[in-house]
Image (tube, rainbow, N blue to C red; front, side):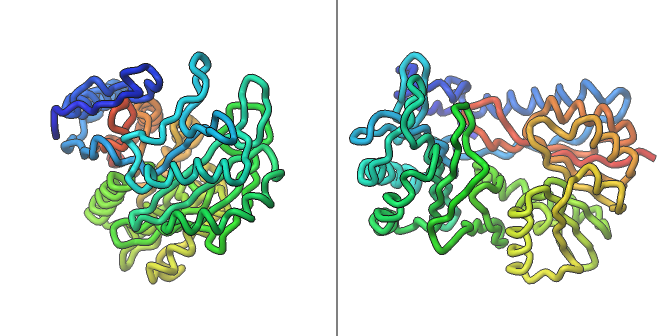
Length: 384
């Protein structure tokens, strides 16, 4: 850990204040996250014992973000990639220090491609233009996925025409898609995805396991800390040695593939059919049979009581499990629950509902330096 402060001209000029904790030394950020998370969880235990808190997992303070979500502004000839501010308008953040070096190198080329392909940036006040966002993801191997978020397919032919130019100038570019988001609303992306490259998924090598990230698949934006999260999960699960594991909200299979072991059956449940297909590809690549790991497309809430498991892994979105699923977990009665949360407040609400479970150990993992956001992993054991 370090007391070093990250310097940012955009922050100093009030062009971007997304890094709300930028003026706190990094070691203070870690300590504050640990304290706040402990307080949220302690407040709902109601007589249940406190968990053992492991030291927080630190991140690199900069250069850690492997996904860039850039609002496209300006004009065709002078596009900006960054954010939209109601007072300032389009703000260019191509040099944002949070992104990996590979993403920072690619962004100027992507801006040049906007001009070359004649992609008119979307103008919020007039609701005109086509190109809303460009989304860039980098894998640990330095390969990239680029998604152009457009209002329509009007620019499809021009993008295809100039795509060889882009692929030549960004050697690591493997996946390029068009995402169609026609609504005049503050939505990052739409439902329709058009893949322009032969390769449709980005391989993400994590702890020797290759996960296959589709264009609309969820994956942590801090891959190094995500790798630590998966390693910790595997260690804790191996200590318990459950015969059966259910991974709810399994996505592309990160937790499920990491906790697989001889003599153990792991089932991943995910609502997205595309994510399940990607998880299956990861299973085959890991050399695991369907009897060891299987993935099911379905609703986690309804699936939970249909089959029993010794341990259940949950990694819900920020809204948490909610009363319904937390109650079903309580009723299903697995011996242990491994809960990965990006929101200590909703984690605490869910633990308050799961009265039969007590936290055994917990660890904060700093996925999001320079902000109050974090990930926390908690192992819950059934009392009695």
